[in-house]
Image (cartoon, rainbow, N blue to C red):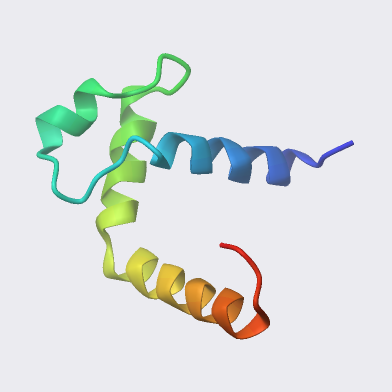
Length: 71
């Protein structure tokens, strides 16, 4: 059985599939999943656009590249 943390991580990954850096806010907000409260969706969009998230993703991508695993 998966932990709640793993399920939450997988759910966020599913949500991010519709995210695109090139989209405007109104376009992204229109794509909000019915299961997600709009305030939470806005937080996720802002987080994905943040420098912190970009650095974290690049470090994770580098780690997977070095280890030869998929991201």
